[in-house]
Length: 377
Ligand SMILES: *Cc1c(COP(=O)(O)O)cnc(C)c1O
Image 1 (cartoon, protein in one colour):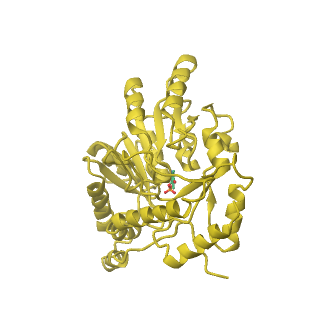
Image 2 (image 1 turned 45 degrees about the vertical axis):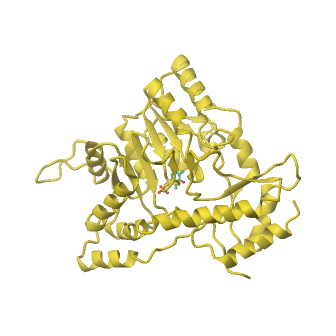
């Protein structure tokens, strides 16, 4: 059996061990230290727009702390893109609030501005005003930011960007993760860069960053003893993991270029296969890091399904994955309101994610090519 081709596996840059060794040499094996500080600076320099970043143990933790700082609590409603990974919605539940799910735009795959506005109007009219909007840049594709920001501003609802999959993506030249009141980044093992596990909360102000770090380190008041006036969390990133992150930030631009090259490979590979659409940017306003290249098989023109194609890959020890199953279809969220017309559901039924690691070799691509070449669509 040929070796496994993974969907998206960690790809070290070379500098990581140096920073980990430094932490060991100085015995800063703790959730604070030089690597944490330098990793945050590297993220801030990369993102620009005067944004600040607090390094945390996960992207999920980052979203949790963003929602806390937006005052979300029991009985509140938060609008969330339905087509996403569950971590975009779970922190809403941690706070006793209710997610209100919004469908995707057919072309962009992220939150539909049209359904977003319908949802807001209906919630205001019949229930209560949503307290925040969580938009996702799925698979690295920037969401329709002009339209969504215009709606956020008009209704005065703060925006949180889930940029877990979109570090290195940009919209009209501005980095994803710099549009919202808050944005979360993830450095989980399968993301475009990784700290094995980790995340960051991107903030607008120094006060928000300080508050984020305060909450993530058990909310300890200024006092000689342990004094607490607020509920705290243990969410700070370890100085060892941050060392990995420093090394990874040095190669982030290469990783984006490599993932985008994978995307070009797939566009070429499927260019003659009319029933397969490779998901790509609709205009030059959108610049995706192409974290995962995805495609849909048009069921109107073939009886072959995404699952047939995934099986053909699996037979050759090549990992692929269905698209995210929309949140409004998940048993855990079945009682939550939903606004849309099953665009995301259709995508889920027809799509798949293709191997997209920045470490994909030419041999790997040859094996992928062979699967497609031998597949009868
Ligand atoms: C990975 C991911 C997260 C969560 O990040 P973790 O670091 O794994 O907690 C959130 N949202 C999306 C869209 C993701 O892909």
